[in-house]
Image (tube, rainbow, N blue to C red; front, side, top):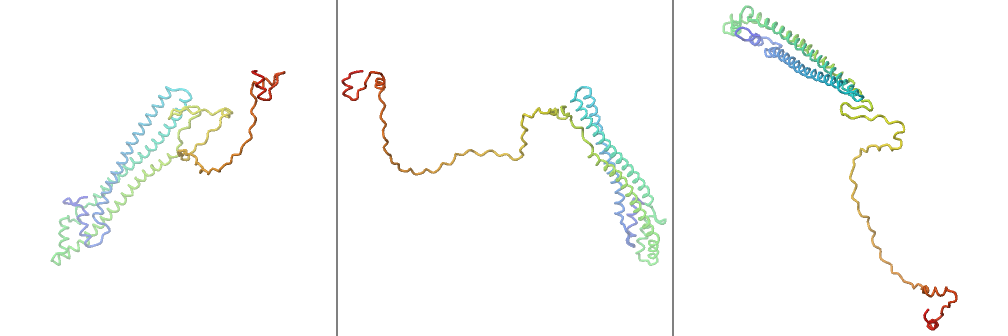
Length: 313
């Protein structure tokens, strides 16, 4: 918004009016609201560009998964292959759903950027009509002279200048300011509606959390992600002779304590013992004597003298 000599209308005419009557808005505030249009458009375009780039990546990933699934169909057969195809198909279907949701968000952002761009253009065109180069047929230099003359030495000239300012300039600037504020409000409402388009599209992403995951792997088939084979269910009575596995112990484990020698009792003082003589049993006879005594007709000497007289056996 420029007037003669490259100076903005509000920057040129608001200060002298504000010196005479109170205004609800300043020139800096009006210019700041005008600059917000450009910032809003820049944000909308940047968001649409970023999400568009992410959408291209998602579409490329979906295409790659579709190619891998076709190769899997062509080169793998059997129950494990069927389970893997089912699982991969579930992942692919979820990826397609998410890709479509992001595409709807991107479309909303693109539309929001277009609405913001159109609102900015229309508002700028209307604001240009408010940037009047003159007021009541007087250009800015003449208006500046009347502003200075209103406080000049000549009474008649001062009264004439002051009267023109109050009757022409002040109402003109007040009307232009009100029109521009209304334009800024309408533009802000339009841009807020564009942001709401994006918010509604983003709310649709919350439903993706409720999507079902890929189907569970059937018993006896291969897990497509880990490659492990789930064991089939046991037949009745197959494992009855084996005890069930002990439940996992989640308690913290500690090393067993080191073995220690048992405590020895304190030695007790020995009691004095009295030895009593035990009767001696007679010694058994010699083997030769016992043998001779057992033979018939052989007498055993009763004394040593008889043994000497008998001589050797």
